[in-house]
Image (cartoon, rainbow over all chains, first blue to last red; front, side):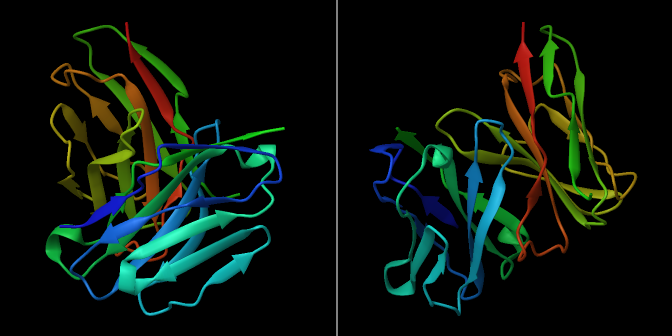
Length: 118
Length: 114
């Protein structure tokens, strides 16, 4: 069975601090995709990044960076120099299609609420 | 602009009533999904459809029903059999059945039982 664990329920920081969100996943599949989504107060989930299981390169996009480590089954997300607009719920998700029961379906973590105060 | 439209944004239901949540997409995506979100529980899959006229139960399908008569539309009916329907409902679609390119989400419908 697939599982995504986001152990941090809520993280509160002051503006300009860095914040790292943890994501640990479990899957028996060798080919899979990992995602991060942001859910602002408006409710719609916004796609941030997609990474396939064969690409362990870390990625930086502006103030966002991602650290994918297959050895520890982790896909952590860091926001550098946080801003108030970063306040949202962030979801990590896993998608694979090698087994019938997981085909095309996402497994979401419970989400981490990030609160950035001025 | 292409996207997913969910309506209504807020919905109030009396106990014992069925209600239908609308989800329409103009992205030409094959697959569509319904998720339920409760505080602290993340997203849970209700139903999904990978092709027109076909759909599958997700993890929490009891008390819900769907149809997929058109590629663009995937309405969700919350029936009176659903014991605790108050939640935030999200519709999503993906360009291919495998979901490898991620989902596009609608803005959600917040359902409250009064």
